[in-house]
Length: 75
Image (cartoon, rainbow, N blue to C red; front, top):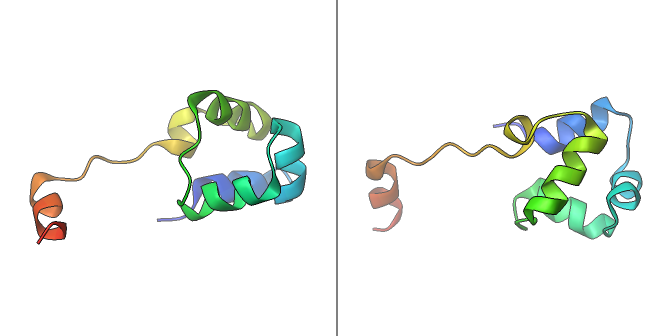
């Protein structure tokens, strides 16, 4: 799956640093969000969406794992 935040950021011609400044966080925070290693607050998610002109669903929607997939990962 493509990282939708990175795609949207690039479409807006923003660097990680520029996006970070617009939403009031560090570049490292944006990097971690893009890598899936940081779960931002709803407020931060909304601010990011406003800046990149996308909806929450377009950027942050995660499909629910099927029960079978979850059981396989836990073994």
